[in-house]
Length: 396
Image (cartoon, rainbow, N blue to C red; front, side, top):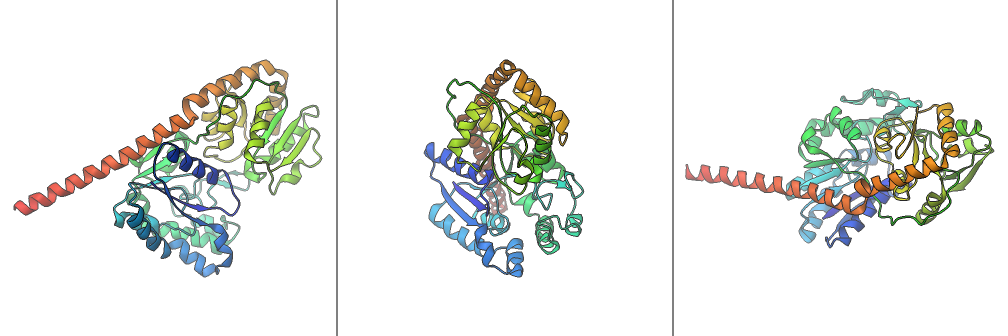
């Protein structure tokens, strides 16, 4: 197995998912090689050079060809190719005769900022078409030039048929996102679902109290909604594990304790002692790993009723849902949770059951193998059909 990933400058959940999946494969005896680039390299590049890399990297085909000869992978599983690896990877894999599986961690193929979010509200203006509106609005990093480079990449590779013809299987993290990717133009028969996972043992029984937020403190995470809700609950206690550009919105809010960014083990300790995790996102979250971690810890989730969150969190069963962007509704749900500890404890038990059934490492491994086996079976069938055609031509 060859795993490909263009890592981000600011480490996030996607990087952790890639590492966990590699560890899972190796734990089951699979030989895994990696091909990785980091966006730390971008700092030394000119804008023109970066734009060219984004469209088509000349380095990637050369590196991949060497890896294929040396390692001989059955499948190439890629997570992120933007911007340094580029879609030239898919063409190089096709020349080498190795099928590609692509996990879709965000909406980059349909939206320049990858979030379907603009000015604090959901925006699907570029869905299913070239994202010229995103260029006009400078949706990628607030830059018209950078947005144009990214839009150029999407236009080029849609025109070449890269996304339609060079990827054997796309992995969406849930059914909601699968539907969005198909709506955006990906072939439905090649988009399958496999959620994120964690490998956590059952938590020790403990007295749970207070609420918890885990994640980057950025606009799409609903920090303003969270701050507004806490302002309505002066007697509530909320611990916040994370940092980001909107950290200041929580400064001085009664009942809020800001912990800063925490290592994974400390986050897990916080989850094991909280009453509920709060996920107030205002965008189409693909599949927050924090929810899987919470469920694994027997921690129910109070989440926005938006996108996949409304499917992952079962209202009244494994958590509570509220209207996205509505601090009053969030405050009502948080108040109910704090007033009904027994009810939240019962939801936490059901969340742990849902984790074992859907999001554990073993369940995830079996699903991943099903996907790989399906891709390899299709490849064998295609080769057999090609041999038969060649044989019939020879007989003629």
